[in-house]
Amino acid sequence: MASRQLGSEAEGVRNPLSKPHHEMKDGVAVNVTRPSESLDVPLSFRIGAMEAFSHLVRGNLGPGTLNLPYAFARVGWARGMVLLLLVTLQGVYSMVTLVICKRVLLGGREGTYMDAGYAVFGAPGRFSVQIAIVIVQIGVCCVFIQLISTNLEAALSGTGINGTICTLCVTAAALLISMLRYIRNLKWLTMAANVMMAVALLTSTVDGLVVIEEGQGSKPGSSEANDIFFFLSSMFYAFEGISVVVPVENSYTTPLQPTEPTPPERHVSFIKVLVGAMGTVSASMLLVGAVCGVAFSDISSGSITAYLATERPNPWFGIVNALTSFAVFMTFPLQM
Image 1 (cartoon, rainbow, N blue to C red):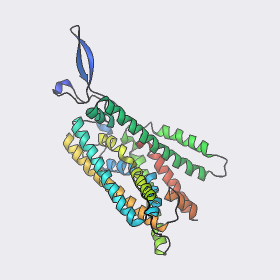
Image 2: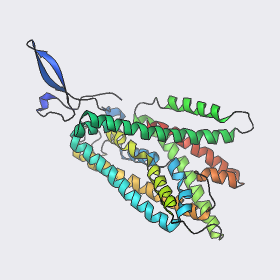
Image 3: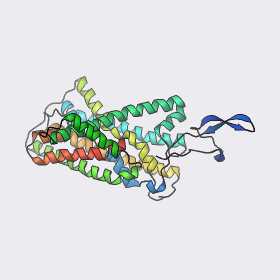
Image 4: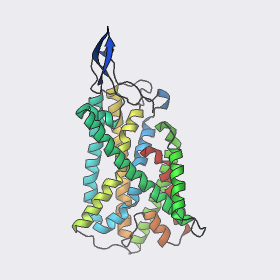
């Protein structure tokens, strides 16, 4: 991303992100301020409401969502629905609060999580936020690579290609696709990935409904602490896209003012898109998690598509599992 200054002395207001440094003036060293680096997205690379919606949905419908049927199977559909609602409410609240705080702290300008941390706590805040984001994103990216590598190894079984080679190839390809610079460059990749993921979730849900209709599946959920903890952990991980909120918001422009929208209009419009996208994500998680958790109560896999590809004889499930891998791969840059 290109860097830009977040403010100027000409505006008459000192930017809260400005860092002090010394410059020589008339032979005397004086303290002046210099804004930290931020993100300046050219107008030609900004995105509209539908693209922002698509990126937010795709950023949260990934490997974590595929693990929810297993989590629901452990705690039961009723208890799982209540817990999902609670986690969803705090997740959406946190995302909206993040956008509002960014606007207040940065004056409506584009910026990063680190800029917000610096505005509140100074250099320690910037460093702490950066470390936290790096740790979270390394974990998410490792899961992405592991999922794709595992599915690739399964697809190439019998060829002599082992898991290590698959992991190295997937990592190299992921690094290459991560070179895409702006979120707008991911438009078609994200749309294609959303279609593939929708096919995977729809296939899993329909097959689950068929199993339930046949009177199969279902078992009492557990109320043990470790199962509750596992479900909550799975839900928090399923909202893996919280880190893409600020980058998407930085690139967003309002539908009515695609050139230079004022900060309040842009933030209000984006929050509406954000709430709509997360509502869609939550409904999808609830549907596939509850239905498949009841239908496939014996599931022991962290991926419902991998479970179906293994346990169901229909080759379509193998195709769906492959589509899931492609969907995860094509949106890997969103996590960078």
